[in-house]
Length: 156
Image (tube, rainbow, N blue to C red; front, side, top):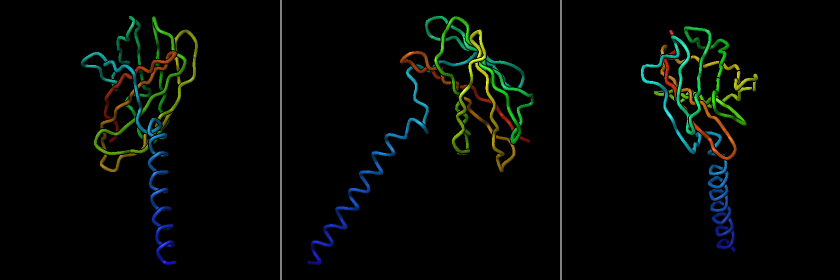
């Protein structure tokens, strides 16, 4: 009898581990932005000074800006993505700390007409003061997801 109880407990543990693995695999796209194409912004771009631009596949252009400047932490931050020569079904911006995990922060932007998408977020305070961030603009068009990463510093 003790052998069958031990076998049942072991089977339940193996089943729980498999279930955790499946759930983690299914939820991973929420935590890690997946992209079909990654393009990069102009060299020397500084979101603290103004909007940054990137050329998209198929000849379109993307312009991304954050306001106010200097970019604050723990205060509302306005985001604007402008597309020229490209269409998008959905635009989100994934904010990630470069040297420290600052949690999940991926707001969706709302269509604002004429190829513009706008939204608002707040960056959390980093205990070390200044923080290098990466804001990855994710443009979904049809079945393609284009990622455009931008780096900037924010904080004291």
